[in-house]
Image (cartoon, rainbow over all chains, first blue to last red; front, top):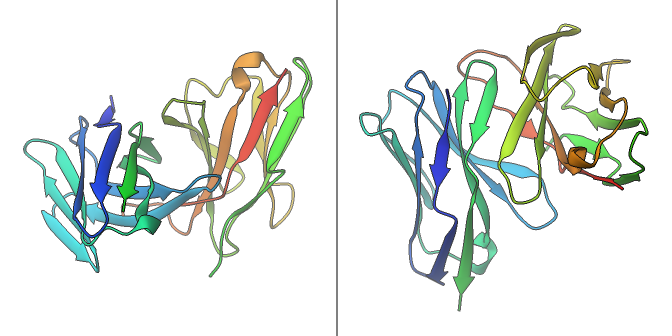
Length: 109
Length: 115
């Protein structure tokens, strides 16, 4: 079955890099995703990576995938106050997404 | 930019009442989903829907739940007789194709409170 785990909280200083980690269990995952949720808002797709890739970069975002260890990370460079949100890791298996519990990122001045 | 919309943003109901949550998916999308998030818990898959049929459902999606695409734009989730434990944020999502390359886009959610 699918199980996705993430650390719950991350506090980072403005301008530093943030790294959010995620582990998943289902080796048949095809795509892995990062979604962002701001207070009162829905789930905004940030980026995704195909399971046969090991890295993807998109502006300030870098996704690293270690398929052997089933470990996914999201690095946000030059973290800004607008990056404060909950970040969800999700794996896609069959039709559905299985989500982690979300990492609450707090950016302090 | 096209987006998924959901109404209402907040619904309060009494236990045992029926509720219908509404979603307007992105217009050229063909695959539709419902997820829910109980406060403090993970976002959980409920159901996926394509070509007027359920394509997959979770064990949460029991006989109390149903989905419908009543016209060309709306996608609804009905809970027949709500229970206290149905209180959650319900998210609708849609995608354009359902294969390994599709991406699900989510609406802002409907917060359902059952009293």
